[in-house]
Every structure is written in structure tokens, then in C-alpha cells.
Length: 571
Image (cartoon, rainbow, N blue to C red; front, side, top):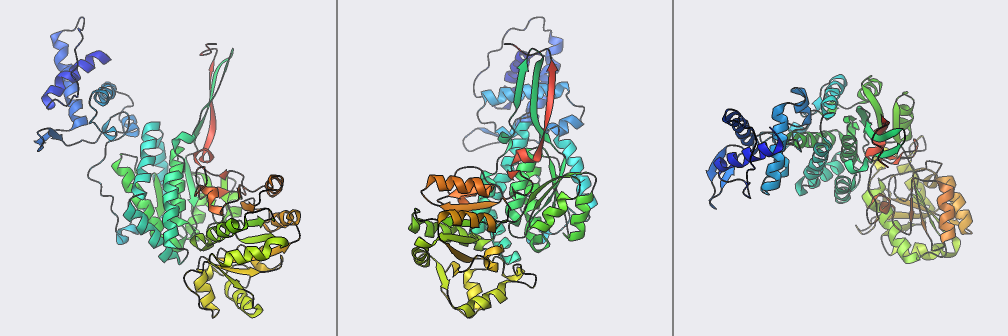
């Protein structure tokens, strides 16, 4: 059967389905076609149309027949069932005919293009179900990795269109208002960090602005020797370690990017974000199941732990490791001998010089520093201000949410509260609000206070350490050149994020060149660097230590070259 014969058969068969075709199909004469081979062809077409449209159900109030869609097969299912058969080829042609001639056929029901929803899969996950086995959650890391490895092999046979449909499905399930609210509130409550209102923004950002398959561009080179293509291909199974600071955001972002690149992923969430992390993974897996994706593209363990993280990192089937967290875990994954992406710590400085719009700079700095109680690694951690404008900057900041602490005794109490015996941030204070921290040192303030502002010398621990809480030290310097030099020093070579407020383009350029951070925001709040109020895509895995920068599907893929010799050069 050729395409025209199939098209004609579709037209005839559709008449028995209540006129599903939107436009009549004029059958072209077919040469040398006998009655003997018409019937089997029509039977085949009828069977396949039934699979696509479903059996005719009842007549709707409007008088048109309703159909119950039947599950179709995705690429991996077709591959497992003897690669490409005549039925599959016929099915694909029928799908195209229906798509062209019947605008009412949903895209998700087109066989050979994307997968029909599995109607028997319930997406809802209760809090109790979230921590139970199933839907990608396994009792051991060995089981989780083995399942992800099988899924990735099946995933190889899914088309790019199917792959993008799965990515779109992840976006859809996360962007449900009740899901955003639930994940964000649970994340704040279970970790004791941040503000759920800001986590809603972050989760939405991860779902909406993380790149998909469009990021996987192809390079081509042709000449007398033929044609060479360079394409991005999957690594295989990726092991991803996620933090307590951005647990759901990182899972959403990494799942989209890693699956877009063709990988499956095994997560090792932070134990303090266990329930909300497992819930996120289950919601994604159930949504993927409705789209016909291979089971267990995303997996994890029921009880996240350091031992399980170590088991994942050392598992021979894990081909890439991605760590989003502190310097310790980044160093660990880089020492495994596997391909590793490390999204480590930062200590982002913000420089303000005498040419800046001081009022706007004050608002931007307070908003960026206080966002999610300073949990994001991109957030402003210290101000370096030219002395000429420092007092005015402080005055402006106190008008938009900063509480200025000047009493040395209160500063000492804050040090004792938020710094641990090793000189780093006290975990129990990370991500807590300015109101909470001030209350702990005996100062009652209103909810309008967002940041604790302190005028300090450059060697103070609050300047040198990344606290991840809304305590904002301000250091005065004589001029902008010294400010830039100090910013480079206190950033500690993390190459993460820096900000500068200035209208002096030469000085902006100088700082950008010297500080070499992955993100450099000019005249805006830090979060503009990940697409909130700024242009560009987002990520919650910002790989400064290993150099990938703002990760996306390309970062989770490897380049492969395909060469055709002495052919397809048509110039």
C-alpha cells in the first residue's frame, strides 16, 4: 500500500466512524488493484483508525459522536515490538492523514508523532503516597539505578517530538496552580528555609524557562569529502545530587534539561527535603506515564542518605554526576573520575559606585538579597560601596526594608547566633527571615523588614562567608577601582555571580573582566541573572567550579560526529 491507497482507505473507513474526517477525500484511481487486496487493506486501516480514534461511544448533545481514545505506542514501545512493521508505517500515514483532515484530533493522539494519554494513570499523589515505593521511588540505590538504566535504553527510541511532549508534560503538571502552591509551601515548611511565596516564583520559573529540546542544535560541515553532522547525544544515566535550599526547583530544572538531552536521571535529594523531593519526582513520573513515556525515567530512593549518595556516585551505570550544593559535595563528585558538573557555592558581591542611580540600586539590592530569605546562591551577599555615596545608599535602603544595626553588642549577638564553631553559617539560621533573626537577639520589628544591614570592615566574617540569610554587610572603599578589587577578593574565585550598579560603562566592563563570574548583573537585582525580570533562560544548577555555567540540555549531552563520505555535498 502506498500513501494514496492508505489515504483512500482512511476516507472510506472514516465514514463508518460518524464522518470524523473534516473534509471529503477524493479517491484517486488506483491501477492494478484487485478486489482481493482491497478488503485486507481496508480491514487493516479500519483496525488502526479504531486504535487512534477509539470506539464510537455515544452521541453528544450536539449530535456528534464522541470517541474514547485508545493508548498508542511511543517510539520505545514500537522499537521493542520488532522495530518498524507494516502496521506501524500504515499507522503513521493514517495519523498524518487524520491530523491534516481532521483538526479535532488532538496532537497527543497522533501515533508516530507523540503518545496518547494513558487514561488509567492517576496523577494525584497524597502526602502518604509520596514516600511509598513506586512511581520511581525504590528501596535501594541499586534498584533505582537499574530501573533508570532500562528506561534510558527505551528512551533512545523515542522521537524528538515525543521527547519534547514529555518535557511539556513536566511543565504542565508543575504549573498547575495547586501543585505550585503545594510544592512551594511544603518546601518552606519541611526545610525550615525561605518563603513559600518566593518558592512559587522559583518553581514556576524552573518549569517555564528551563530550555527543552530546542537547545540541542546541530552543526554541519560539507565539502568535497562529503557531509559531517555533529549532534548532541545523551550520556545515559545521570546521577543528580540536589540541595535543601532549592530542592523542588532543582529537580524540576534538572529533569527538564536532562530528559531533553535524552538521559534518564537518578536523584539523591537532601534528607531534610525528603518528602517534598519524593513528591515532586512522583508527580513528574505519573505525568510522564500518562504520556506513554518509559517507566522510571526519573528515580530516587525511599530514604535519601549519605550512604545512598555514595552508592549512586560509585555505581558503574551512572555515566555523569551533577552536584548542586556546597563545595564539599562538588569536590567529591569531581574526584570520582566520572564526568562531573559541579554547581557550588558563591559569595556574590554587589558594587555601587558614585555614578549609580542610588535610589534604584537600594531597591534592587534589598529585593535581591531578601528573595527567598537569601537562599539562592546568586543573591547579594555583601555590598561594596564607594564612600562618597555610602551614607545615602544606606539611607535609601532603610526606606525600602533594611534594618540598620549599629550597636556593637547586637552585632556580637548576631555573630554568636548565626556563625558555628567552624566559622561557617549556622544551619538552623540559614534561610530564616530578618524578622526571625532580629527577634533571636532581642529586637522586635515589623514584617516590612526584609534585610539586616550592617556597616562592617572587609575582613569581617559576615563579608567573607556566604551566610545564605538576609544579613547584608556593607563595606566602604575610597573609589570604584578599589571596590572592584575587593569584590574579586571576597568572591573567592567561585566564579558564580556578581552585581554592579554604575553608569560608567568602562568600570562595568572592568569588573566583568576581572571577576569572571558565570553571572554578572548590571544595574538590577541578582535574580535578573536567572530570568526574573531579565532576559534569557533559567537554571538552578549553575556550574562555576566545572565551567559549564548556566546548565541546560547541552550541558547534559555529549557531542557525537556522524560522517557520510563523498555524498550529500550539493554545492
